[in-house]
Image (cartoon, rainbow, N blue to C red; front, side):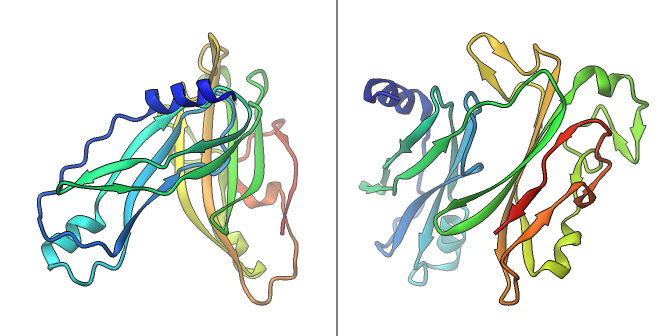
Length: 242
């Protein structure tokens, strides 16, 4: 991505207003940016949470609760693969300008729209490990199913059931797994004039924060057996957690 395109993406991505109602803000805090997906794909929208962290001890309870809940979201749509930098962003709080950190994202190639599959990968962001599980489901496949498949309402995407990762299956592996973000959308990936919905595909993504215990053996293989209701015939490649 050239600098001109990156500047244009930054300018078009951010529409954010934060109003602080308390005048007791102190300077022991910092503003951090956190993406819902640490390594998005070409054409995907990326939600970035804007959060205030740090020492809030000097604030009264009302202000502390307000500060802890301070967050905003904007959407950044990558236009090319490779490394993209977002931030730092500036915020005016009680007449004082504060600046956030900046984050680096690696934009990956897009997934194919013409076949069903589940793609698993491991990413790292700010020294934390994340497991990213993506799935493409054909719309006509869902329409040919009954209204309820193994307890999953096919008209209510995002509910548990279809291709769901069994997080409890990791308990004996010394891998701790916690859901970070989940979304199921008919229009979540667009490349040029072509979108996943126009090609008859529905895209799902789950990102999990993972950590390894002291007795972790160095590798752990994720297979089909780690999923509930994984449709037969879909592409799936085993992934080795490290």
